[in-house]
Image (tube, rainbow, N blue to C red; front, top):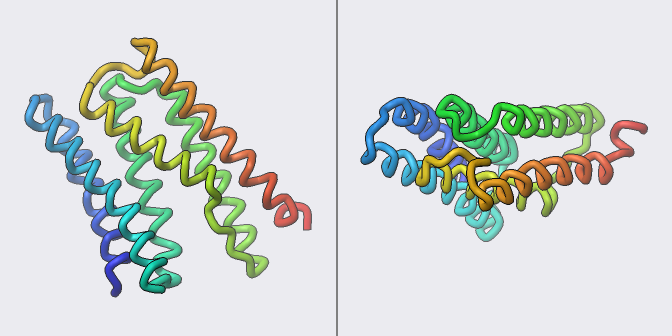
Length: 176
């Protein structure tokens, strides 16, 4: 197994630890959970860089990398809803987008096509990870301050726009 795939698996293994830590309401745990989440996010960028640079792209890597990203973001968002830092509707929006895009990818796969992530999808993932990291550190409800309102609108917007763009660019998969 190559390093990019190991890094993706490390990201997956961080999820239950981050989730467990978020149940402990102490200050030092707040920093540990944020640091672990931040390190897990860094593995996302590092595994992609290493895979492209060294031509270590594998079928397993094409599968596990986006799954690890989604599991990390969605599981942590569930905990942020539990902690009343994120409204449930935002989690539902993100979940609906991810399931819809994955459904499109599955349809494409049955036709022998592989749909790569687009630049808007990468911006979406980065934005979501950055927001989650900020919420883990600040522990302030997302829509309780003007900057949280802007961040929340940005996340909702980029999530919707990237999903619509994904379907627009791959309309032939559905129609054809």
